[in-house]
Image 1: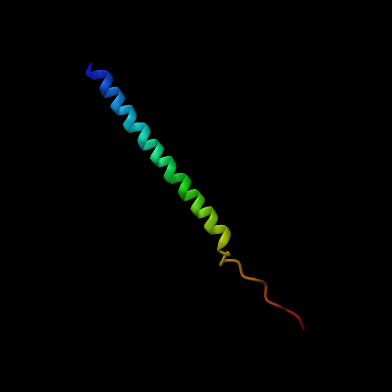
Image 2: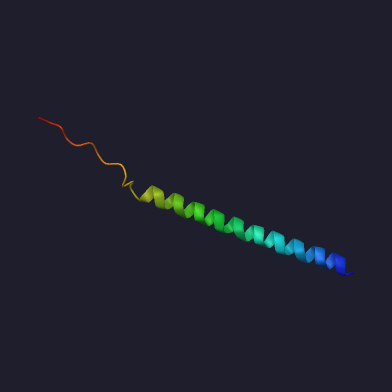
Length: 52
């Protein structure tokens, strides 16, 4: 009787942790993707004008 309850408890703990991790991974991916598309890259400098 206790073995099925232990298996169920461990399964619920494992899959709930897996789903929470997946949720935070998706949120972080969306956040940084949207942030990068809005913020211009600072490391790229425009070429200086060399008109004479």
